[in-house]
Structures are given as structure tokens and as C-alpha cells.
Image (cartoon, rainbow, N blue to C red; front, side, top):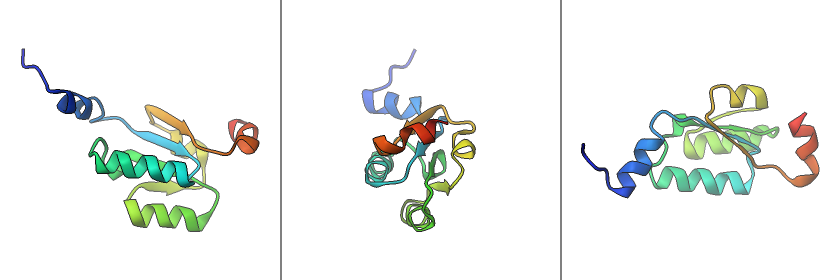
Length: 95
């Protein structure tokens, strides 16, 4: 059995994983940028849902991630869901 080095193992874990971010603000952008920079994910594996068209366009253009306004569509097929919203809107997002 071939042993993988730590960085190879980490990358291998995420090969087929989709990640959905609910909320496309600064925290999401920082996470997306880091995940892509470390090459843990490809842009096509990351989806971001945000109500602001300008923010969706920026994230799609800057990082190549999938974007949309529909939270339910964003989480379809995602192995990991990151709630990246302000506390005061969390209840409405969870509904």
C-alpha cells in the first residue's frame, strides 16, 4: 500500500467533493480564495449563493466559482455546506 504525504492526502480527500457557501461576503471570499490558492478545490467544485447580483458576478468573474441566488440550488449535491451569513439573517436563511 502506497502512503500519501499529508498534502497529497488532503488534496485526495476533496477530489469529488462539492462545497456550497450560503452567503457571498468577505468571509466566503477569503475561504474561497484560500481553498483555490492551496489547490484543494477546483473552481467548479465551489458554489456560492448570495442575494446580491453584483456580488455573485464578482465572485464568478474573480474566482470562476458557480454562483446563484437560490440557496437550495446551491446546496444540491454539496458534501459540505458553509453558512456564511450575518447572525441577524441566519433564521431566515435556515427557513
